[in-house]
Image (cartoon, rainbow, N blue to C red; front, side, top):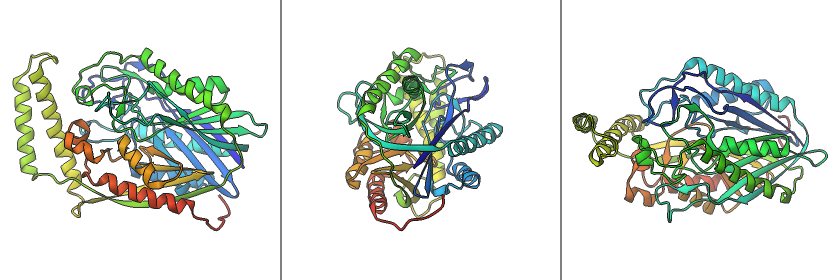
Length: 440
């Protein structure tokens, strides 16, 4: 068995538009910490896989597909065996257009550089592979992620998944950290490029092992530091949204991971890849004319409150209504392209030894993640924002409560069940014995 790794800087130029918050005003004024694409390539028994973490908000599925094909041509690693996921950084370049930023422009020149960097990182990881062993574990993490819709009682997955890679002498050389939480310690008022708390965590891990670390996000749709997503979306800044707090949370996550590392055994393991298509039900929306009228009324009401401060309750409500009506128009246009009422969503599975990673091109709620794990009945890590981006997948209960994530979701309440069923099918397929497939 062999493994290799690589990371390449993908920080945008100063002056670039930063994405992640509809309420952010202004362009980047500097760099707090660089953004990277980080790749881990693994080969075992004639099979190969690549795990790629891109420190941006999200990527379109078509873009990811093209990059996967480029990696396959360069390395021989099948596109189906490459998982490309975003950390969901909210202070990075504009890489997608979505419900929160329909008027932002994607810099095609930057995207070309990003595609080349992802390909190069995966190729370098493949070229640098050497004898290795791997092992999976989990660390209990408290005091980092909070359910932002219900900070007191809402569900949080407090386990951080860990992939440990050792060299032929048994020395830890690379670590993959998996944790479900929005990297949004910094808010819309921040204009410095940053990877937020995951960047701080990876820095701590790399310094401790003297090697390489990467981050995958999980089912983090309703998990952050506990601040209100509704208020954040309209520019209300809660206390504690500082780089110092990001460093503190990163150190806490890294500390839990580093404490668990010595207890994780490693071995040469087998690899397996598969995918399944889930027919995920979409929301229904009123006619376009009605949505346009609602949006116009909301914008006119907001304009009538010009001059009031953000602390004014009526202004806050008006900003929220204007945002929601704009989101409804955007998502209704998207959903109208699927008259059958279902979006075919691909779930990718990679089995590395006994652990199965399930890549999901969306932001699933923590409860949806728990439903998927329960349905699969095996060791599962849900990798969010993988191979594309289709926004929030809330749990059923959340639709009764409303709020930002519900308004921002294109999916119907039954989406949770559809994804859990598809993931269970995928996990079952991944556990079946298959005939050896030779070559990369």
